[in-house]
Length: 101
Image (tube, rainbow, N blue to C red; front, side):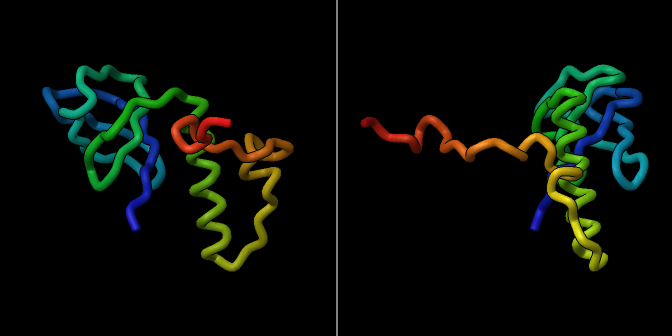
């Protein structure tokens, strides 16, 4: 399984950015989302940025990854703590799956 990891750009050299996120610092290929600048947030997969995200989205993804780590370690997960953006919200289908009524 491949998980997207949010990382924040620290510096850029051409199509490679030094980024910091879960697990520390890494060199990320940013060719698909260039141009990027220090401070930008990226969603990365296997050493490459696939999309730009904002800081709030980065936090939501980071909390979800923390929940997975807690579950993997055998801990209990308080859904309201890790997924506050989902509490009290009804699930919605994306527009293209809603169909016409």
